[in-house]
Length: 305
Image 1 (cartoon, one colour):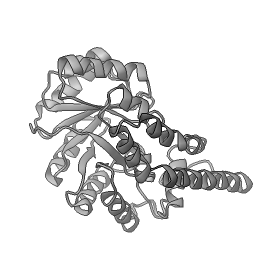
Image 2 (tube, helix red, strand yellow; image 1 turned 135 degrees about the horizontal axis):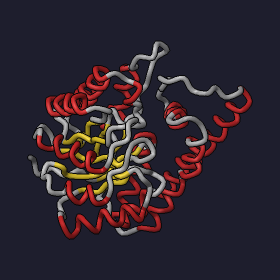
Image 3 (cartoon, helix red, strand yellow; image 1 turned 45 degrees about the horizontal axis):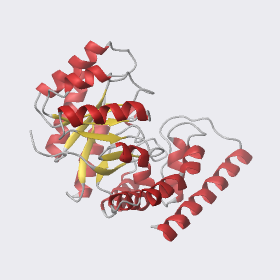
């Protein structure tokens, strides 16, 4: 396969929906253009925060095509290709290849638990399709885990070029980085959580795929710039500046909180799934807290970028 290796900050795109529950492409185009014109390094549509599970395969493929069309090659492109079955994942990989993506990000099939030997065989078979470079996606809170032993075996598949680890488990990430350092130095280990972005970079991750690189791309881009200059303290201060905002986002059904913050940035997101409706007073309190925290983050960024 190619010599491409994903690195840097990827924005996990949030998918806007209209009142009929269909993708709002007018808003989505503005979101993609916003990110393609920013200082982040890559785009990642049809991902977890992008609610791929709430869309049909046809809708997800259309999202992939549309993102690539609007981005026009300005950023690295990672396609969400997660599914609960092999054939749908293959169809996503083919669509991503045809649309010009650099890689496809693929999780363990979800809902029915797979033993680790089956996890290994699943990714091995996908790699042998030889369609597009693959980034493994470890997100154990929603799917089965990719064990360390299976990970080590999959390093033998040369078109598996990276892993996005959303476990937020720094011990595990440290071991992944140590393994690739000794067994396959060209392999990319990327963090999937904004909360511990700087600790992951300090540990040796070469990049990240996260929601806040979409919601606050200027802040995460500044974190990377400070880190590259050796200003670890400054990078960590910026990273810590939005932790209260993440806690507020996580206080309601995922990913509704993240979409509310994105709306405060000027993008009408809508909801696809039915979520628990907050009481009016509770909703107003949450929105006020989010708004105040967002202003604090942006003010801190302006003063410390």
